[in-house]
Image 1 (cartoon, rainbow, N blue to C red):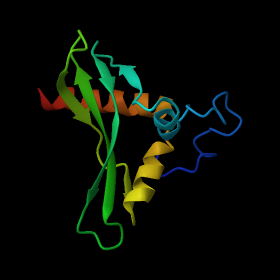
Image 2 (cartoon, rainbow, N blue to C red):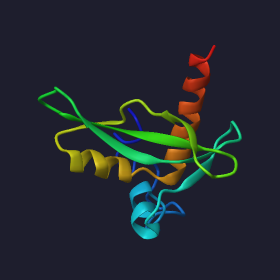
Image 3 (cartoon, rainbow, N blue to C red):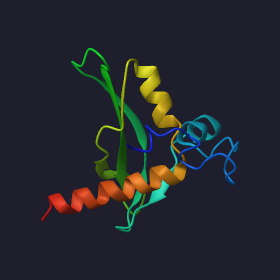
Image 4 (cartoon, helix red, strand yellow):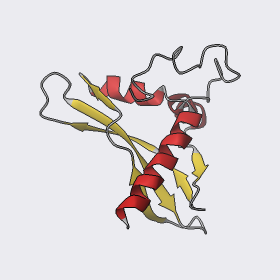
Length: 125
């Protein structure tokens, strides 16, 4: 089960220090700040994140959602690459996929970035 599939209580969010904080989730951060959050990757590069949803041929859940992490130049001048997650949510609508990804805590998103960096490093070998 991925973090997106788990109930918020199962992810330990209720009663946590970030519960109810408007920008403690990816969607909340995007709504509150009108920009994506930035993360420092373990590879030393700065990243932002975007929610992506694709239509598929699956009649039961025709929308797949995942995260893309653009890697920024150290100077911040432009994007020099990216890593992405596998599909995190398969849903009946684009809105549902966006909502489920938006419900991820920023800590979940940081962990997903690190997992994507590990997968990317494994591909380069």
